[in-house]
Image (cartoon, rainbow, N blue to C red):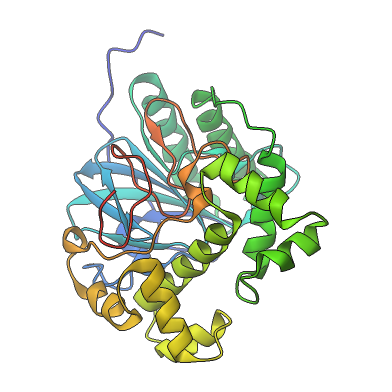
Length: 330
């Protein structure tokens, strides 16, 4: 089939959010309120396909431009906010258990991608059919296998159309293992020595791996992950600042305040106050974790080919592609 160019994304019928393993619904139903006054914690794995209009999605405090054909891959635990009602989108949500036993890796997908041509047509068709079947058969046990395989086909199609990633450096495997350990332990320890002991290697080995893959030290990887989680909790919850610090392993609120200010550039209180600003006016944000700034990590590979961008947990699309500091400068 010869494509005549991108087909405008038509609205896709979607049901309200459902508690099942796989569901589809409108983007507006994801927020606590339709104005997206504050960021919301994402509780399930998501694909978001923009179907109409233009606007910005703020993912972990960094803006992603959206227009018809824009596809976002959002992970559970991230915080999301959208710029009012400037664009419509269909959300595909799933629990990771829904893909158990299927040979598909949703973490191989780009966080931000602009679909075009036959790729866009195919993805729109897959999402449309999944939405129809979720609405017609979602509450029937017999449809469980159908929806699982439809989701797997959609993810595999996206992975195939985005093939062509750069080769991994030799240190990538060590870096991947380190990142997995950081994800499990960042709330309890920020000492590189503790992670090195758990992985059975030296601090020097971990630092060398982090520098090779990201250009940042192992200590920076840990601290940036902690700062990102602190920013998420400050923005998306009303929990007391001291309580947030305690959840992240800080026994004294003053120590948490100094840490956050050093990493982000503003105090926790100032960061929380900024959450009520309009999406396009927010420039205060945590520094992106080191693992989110490279496509060379297997665990955090998010693209690297034309039409996609590595966002991981916190980076943003388009030039400049380097890390963003607490002032909003690249």
